[in-house]
Amino acid sequence: MRKLFFAFFVSIFLFIPGCGYTTHSLLPTDIKTIYVDNFKNGINITGEQSNVRMYRGYAPGMERELTRSVMDKFLFDGNLRLASVTNADLVLTGELTDFKRDALRYDTNDNVEEYRIKIIVNIALENRKTGKIMWTEKGFTGETTYRTTGPLAKTDAAGISAAIDDIARRIVERTIEAW
Image (cartoon, rainbow, N blue to C red; front, side, top):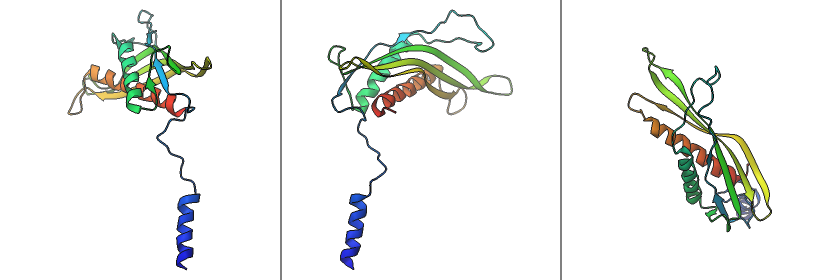
């Protein structure tokens, strides 16, 4: 009876597959390096306002901060090493297309208490070994909300930094997890 009981538990642990979660990359095993090209600034800050878009926004140097943040996230993730464009297996290119800062909550005097920041980019990943585009995303978005008052208040710069961090994390996840 003990042998049967032992065999039952061994079969459960050895032969029944788990949920499939892994911390390894889902990229092909021959892909080890990536080059992150400098994000371009494609935000049209001179366009006319409309009912759809009352306020245009831009934080100077946001594309440089986004490039640096994406590179930092790849370093932290560790599945792909950063390399020069000539030595990389993959090349990630991107263009910053929009920056939105929308008021979410007001106090009784119509002062803004909470904002949502959205950063929108177009990105593409090219396999340099084959010359093919592995994937492309238009309108890829990172966002955050932050309060301007109270104990959880943040500055505009901290809100922008959090949104950049969010989109950089999403870009790395999209690249590594390939879904």
